Length: 528
Image (cartoon, rainbow, N blue to C red; front, side, top):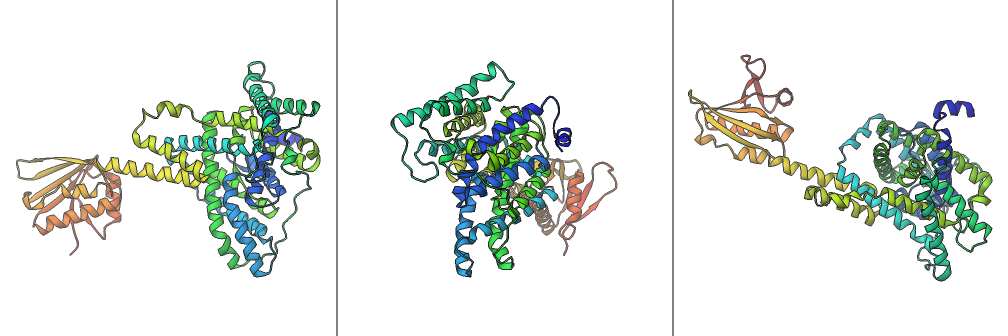
């Protein structure tokens, strides 16, 4: 079996790097999975099970080698509402006070099916429509969110909201260990790249804390991570139409957030590695992982930008790195929990601080005044929405909408015309720019049928009709000329415009004249 995995997912050059980086990622996954499970209001093992199952399955079936998936905070903040309402619903139906967990599992399964459907319909390609300012805002906002997520590590009880901050020697020790971790990660690669610097930093700081018996917070202070293999969930909730209606809105939101975060992370990893992942396959892989996770008692998940960057920076490039991370995490749960629980949180916090530094797009400060004001606004908007709401889908969608509206506004002002009157008395208007919903009104206002000659030609050689609004503007303009007793022709209609006009023949009757095999003059007749 090991030989087959090696042949399928590894090679001699990268196997060591993938395994060691997978071990590093697995160590960093533990506190994150526990913290996100607590945020969602479910037992820590539910988060750990999700982390290893989602990580393992997406590594095999996903579309981006080297990308790490697991339980995430973006999904956890949505799940907390589902679990709470599920518990209330369980009390009403006599199912007990903890029915919310089973509703969560059902929602995760449906979430996965939706994601598989998105991949099957090849919707992953739409990630290409996300503008660069949105991408910059996404990574900057996410870097700030990851930075903020480390603040509880500087309190006496990281899993309890509102816990008091460390002070005195405890705080200085925590800061010193974090600084030591960051120092090792930053400067060890200058001496050797044979082992991941993050792994060396975690091991070194852990040995110092254990050997010197330093009194600092460790993973075990958050929660015990030991457990057995996950088992198939025995659903006690009714799997009927009412349950489907209850979980569907949550599943749709979870699926959208999961796919957006995964595909944005995929794009970022593509840029870092100068390779290209498969977005549609990633949708399917994420969906399969969540379906399996839901059936086996996990909280679901999606791509994790922080852990993915740790993996890439540590040398993990192949699918074996994700397989190793998921496998090591399972080993921790089954056999090595006493050792993992002794790892100081300071070491893992230092690793995540280095992720923040590596994730933030520092060049955005330099280019902010050099790019168009609209792009600068979008960059700041996406960053701000990400930080304030922690809803990555909302942030990205907001940025895309603003960018699209700005593009439409600019394109609407690009349409203009020139004209000439030929010797035969025919007036020719030369149209420049796209004709669509944003420019349709300006297009219509530029023509005065009452003052034009008996025959008018609109030349579309330098223009294109983009949508129904453009067709409607042409139809109404033809109606105006017809009411004035005059003839309107369309000249030099491009193939895509002719196709649109043919599809709209119930609205606009177009007759193509055979005298020009390349460009055509079209008579517009509006039906009585």
